[in-house]
Amino acid sequence: MSAPQVLIGVEVHLQLKTKTKCFSPSRYHYGAEPNTLIDPVVLGLPGALPVLNREAVRLAIRTGLAFGCEIAELTKWDRKNYFYPDLPKGYQISQFDRPLCTGGGIEIDDDDGNPKTIRLIRAHLEEDTGKSTHDEGGTKSRVDLNRAGAPLLEIVSEPDIASAGEAERYLNALREIVSYLGTSDGNMEEGNLRCEPNVNLVFENGDRTAIVEVKNINSVRNVGKAIEYEILRQTRIYHDDGRTMANTPRSTRGWDDTKSATVHQRFKESADDYRYFPEPDLPPLSIARSWVEAERAELPELPRLRRARYAEALGLSPYDAEVLTGDPILAAWFEQALAGPSGPRDAKAVANWVQGELMRHLNEEKVELSQLALTPAGLGELVDLTTSGIINAGTAKALFRDVVRSGESPAALVEARGLAQVSERGPVEAAVRAAMEANVQAVEDFRGGNPKARGRIFGAAMKGLQGKGDPALVNEVLTELL
Amino acid sequence: MDIDETLVRHVAKLARLELTDEEVAGIAPQLSRIFAHVDQVCRLEVEGADPATQAPVPMEGLRDDEPGELLEPRAILRNAPAHDGAFLVVPRFFDGAEGEA
Image (cartoon, rainbow over all chains, first blue to last red; front, side):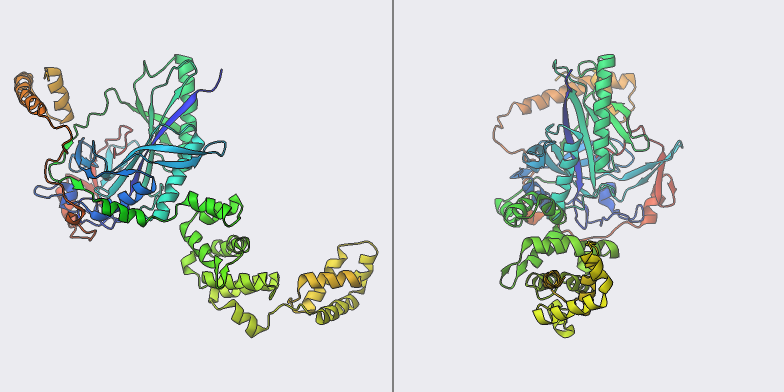
C-alpha cells in the first residue's frame, strides 16, 4: 500500500507594518497596555466612518508584486458578518469578490531539493480582530481590542504543498520575502504572522479524507508538526473507520502545543455563512497602473534570486549564500564590504570574515550590525590587508577585535603600530635560528621523529617576530634549517 | 428565490435575532416579495460593468498613515459591562475557536 498523496493549502494572515490601523488613525503596535489603542471607528460607534489608510494599500501592493500577483485595477470592500467578542463592530471589513491581489506564487525547494512554485489563489486586505484569552477551566474570557482594525493581508495558497517540510519552507520563504520588503515583521510568536494549514489526503483508489483546518499554531516548526500529526491521524481514521470526505464534514482543529496534537474544535456543517455584502461606508478603490509600476520599480532583489546570484556570480557555496542572504541587512552589509576601491573584493574572503569573526562577535556580544563601530568598508580594508599579505592571519584577527569596537581604520592602525607582516628572509631566518637555539630539546625531539615538536619551534620563532612573521616564510625557513 | 420558514430561522440565528413563530410566519412572505423585486433588478444587463456602488476613489483620496486621537482608555472600560484591570471581560466563549480573522 503506497502512502497517500498529501494536499495542503495554507492561509496566512500577515500584519502590515503601518503606524495606524487599516481604516482609522488609531495607532497600533504590539505589546501596548490592553485597550489603549482604540478610537471610535475601531469600536464602530455611531457616526464613526472608516477611511482607508494609503500606506496599508501600498504595503499590500508591494507584497503582492513580490509574490508575482496581479494587482486589481478596481478593488472593493465587503462586510463579513459574524458575532464574536473580539470583533467589536459585529462585522469585519474584508474583501470578498474583488481582492486586491490575485494569482502569483512563492518558490520553495521540494523535499528532493528541486525548485517548486506554490501558487497563490489571492491575497486580500482586511482588518484584524481583537485578541482574547480564556481562563483555564474558568468562566471568563478577557478581551484586548488593541489589535482590532490593524491591517492584515490574507494570503491564500492553492493546495500545492505536499508535505510538512514544504509547508515550513513555504512559510520561511514568505517570511523572508516580507522581511526583505519591510512590509511586515512576520513574527509568529508576536502574532503578526498567523498561519492556518488546510490538510487532507488522497488515497490510491481516489478516496479523499475530509479537509481539516488547523488553527492556533504559534511557530513555523509547529505548523510542520501539526501537519505531520494530521497526516497520521487522517490515515488512521480512514483505515480504521473508513472516514472520507463523502461521509465526514470539514472541521477545524486547534494545535495543542503541550500535547503535540491537534484537537477537535468544531465541524463546519454548512459552509461558513458570513452574509458578505458590499461595505456601504467605503467607496471602491481604483488603483492607477502608474502607482503599481512605481511600486514594482522599488522592489528589492528577492532572497532566492540573491542566493542564486551569490552562488553563480560570486562563486559562494550554497551554504554561504544561504547564511549571507538570510537577513537582508546582513546581505547589504556583506555587499558593501565586497565593494573595494578598485573593483569587487574576493567574495569568498569577505564571506569568511563576515560569517566567521563578524558573526561570532555579533553573537557573543549580542549586538546588532547597526550598532557596530566597524563599517563594511573597514572590514573590506582588513580583508585587503590580509589578501595582499601585508598582515598575517593572527594579526588580522587581533586587529579585528580592536576595530570592531573602535571603528578605526585597520590600514591606519597597521601603519601606526607597525603591524605589517615580516616577509623579508633576513629577519625571519634570524628569528628561526634564535628559536632553534633556545629550544634545543625540541629540535632534537623533532629530528628524533616527533613531528609535534616542530610546533614549539615555530611558535617561538613567531613570538620572536612579535607575531608578525609571514607564516609561510617562517615555515619554509624552518623546514630548511631543520 | 423562495424564502421559507427554515431559511428565515437560519438567518435570524446568524443575526442573533429572537423571532416568535408568528413573526417567522409573517416575515417569510414579506422577504419573498422583497426578493422578487431584487430578482427583477438582477435581470438588468450589467455584463462588463464594474460593481461600483459609489464612484471609486483614487490613491490620492486615501488617508495618510498619521496617528490621530485615541479614545481615553478609562472611557472604554467604563462603557463595557465588565472589566478586569485593563481587559474587557465577557463570559467564557472559547468553544475551541480562536478569533476568526
